[in-house]
Image (tube, rainbow, N blue to C red):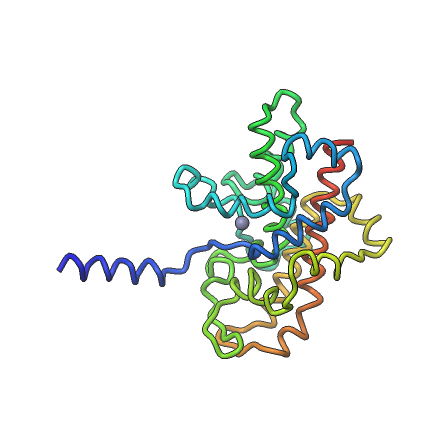
Length: 262
Ligand SMILES: [Zn+2]
């Protein structure tokens, strides 16, 4: 009997959708690599003192790796923010200001202040830099700035090339994997921001980047109805959004770091 109960619990555990995930390993590394390409020489030096020979790309997945250690369970909500539907920019900004629970936005700000604080120990800096590199990736993944009732798209079932999937998973990994590129190839292929974007992104706050991600999220929700069968056409319609979010994430991270170490 006990064995049946154990099996039952295991099955339940497998099928209960949790709001987990993040850009796949690949997605985070692409963001890390693009950030690295846009670092100032001061930032590069400062980062080397913290990470040694580890690149931002390789450090970017640590925020997910630690999920295997129960000591870090309290960081669960750091990876995303649930946002209500239909917010305009100002309402979104106000909403971000009043959130007390940990989320990807307020935790990123906290990590930035740890890195800025001269009193922070090396250990604290290392934690802050690795987590920040990860979280800025997540913040630019549209389904990490999505709705609470469907757990950021985890409960929106869709079919991806004939296989059961969900909207969150499509955006975390499947659409990226579909491009069949390594993270270095990917970063090389999309790291061409326009001069206009570079200039405009420099003047933006982290709130603006949440808003960009939220806008992309709204387009995705509008287009992708539950139980849709997605394949070639979905890639065709959304690959540009995907690449833009990865690029934006990389530049956003570089700007934050260049600002800290100016
Ligand atoms: Zn994450």
